[in-house]
Image 1 (tube, rainbow, N blue to C red):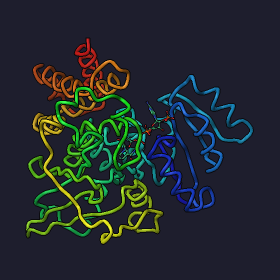
Image 2: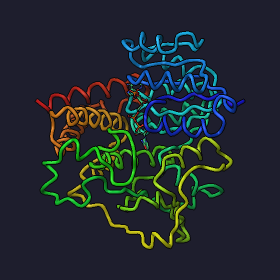
Image 3: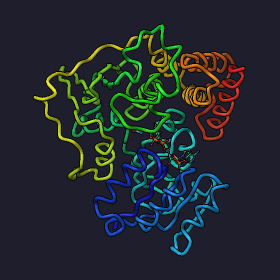
Length: 388
Ligand code: NDP
């Protein structure tokens, strides 16, 4: 039986993964090694019982007692804290879903790769902050990373049987988020509730807000570079309001291969779960005649400054991605807490990038875990200063 672990099981990606595993037979079809979550211990306990997991881990030590109570008498092991999550990553598993949100997903992902597993990577932040480290760790330990972001899964599928040398460009699409039709002058007034509603996808709150600001697409552009080794000038973004074409791969003979599918993350998760085979998935089949038309426009740089910043980050190289992601996470915390306006997020991130790139040697330090964590911390502190 295939041994599996899910990091971030209680989140949006985690729930979709649990759904697919349950439909495929649950505990009778998979040996569930560990499930991890954060504050939603009631749901984590429910999942652990239903999938008969060996271990359930909450990221928060103050949630330990509640999780322990909820799983009393089941024989399921319980643990808490970030180190416990890393320890769970070291338990032998054949397939691990990395779906913790934010830079907190980096260390468990690295630990998982060190045991030579197959890592289904939804946590794009770990590729943005430490892409070369992640990829080198996978190579060194014979591990496999499978992309779970829908665009990256689409590219990955478009490249099956192809030679990377024949790839001319990669195009990822963006829905344009909650404010794609708003007048740019109105963006400064965008509220948390408005930014937390996505026109097409049903996702966690943080990524939904990042879609409205295009920070999500900015992270994904960097993710393309890190995962596929593409140079920044080969990566393009198109606004595609229908969210049905997820990505396109352009080849040197002019052919453009598009991947289409319903806006349902179970498609990309299911592809990673069943790879290299395909299995039946409970996703909607597209009726193109009914859809009728698909629209594409170039992203407006005034509306989406985050995209320009992504290309600046790639030009800076080194630890700029770690600074970018940490500053973005801190700015997003501030927006959620009502301490910063919607447009202030990009302004803060830009200021942080200016500050760290002005300090000799900071960005050029080797991409090692300690340096990445230091850069992450420094960028969060600078972002906090920008708020005051
Ligand atoms: P959610 O916020 O819905 O879920 C995040 C998960 O991580 C939850 O299980 C949460 O626990 C847990 N968690 C939160 N903070 C921590 C922490 N500090 N340490 C450990 N665990 C923590 O996020 P999503 O599912 O939306 O996104 C997960 C990842 O997948 C992100 O990197 C995102 O960018 C990426 N992604 C998401 C997509 C989507 O459709 N949602 C699409 C493509 C990529 P709890 O809820 O119990 O507190």
